[in-house]
Image (tube, rainbow, N blue to C red):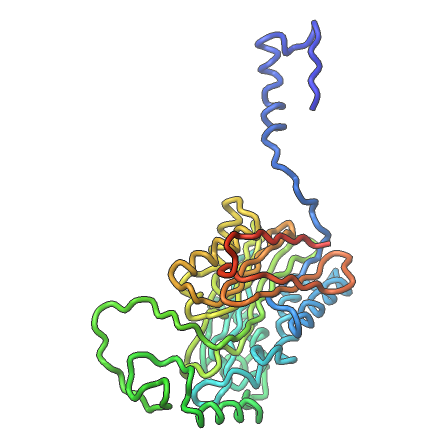
Length: 372
């Protein structure tokens, strides 16, 4: 802004200066516009590779049926695609068997306008986890249903038929694991030694408050997706079959609101993947969205959430993808090289962004990507 001073300029008088003061304050208070608002809609989710099929399915649903498909619809479509495709063996049926060689499913879906959510955990014998989660959101005043009673709810709402979620491959994998002594299970402070035995186990006395158990876990992945539709409405969701060889009945971070995913359309959304038992203690997606509310960029918000976990659990494997309500996005991870996929606006194909582990860098390198 250029101000011209002249003999008749009101800036030469106190009264005139006060008259222009609101204009000056509003001008200098304007935020720096470092990125133009991207074209919508936008779909973004954890992981590349087979998970990009979910990105494409959600995006095409929005762009080919832009007047009838909402952000919530697109999240369901995207996550359901990964469930059907059994993405990386970690989403949908036939993956991540528990100690008893059974596969169960967890899912969460959240609307960023109403802040309502629906989730299922330990869902047995029903393949359509994300759709059952949406039925919880739309047809109950609850947020989470679990186990066999979640299955009963699913059947009552037209899902099914009930069928074994295990496959020949998942049963073979589990039997090989058991034959090898059940190494890498999740038991602690029991006998016989869980590092070499499959039990049955008996608890041992545990004296005093235990420190942070940080042995890591077998890598498993989750699809967590955030969508902004053409009108700017937001939604998020998560679907997973959890950690392989978990204790039967275990629920991870996937169906936990604020952990597996979280969205507030006034601010932005987040999706997470990684060591769920550790991550759910920190509600990293809730923290990341609140970081956006405090003025952080998406990358800064993600890095802060990951660092909070690393301070207590230096070996945690995590991946956090964050997008604000303008469509600017970034991510952070630890314990592995994390990737996320996105497609927005007029993009002809999904792009995948690679995020190095925070532990692997002496200095934090900002990775900030904006939709095209």
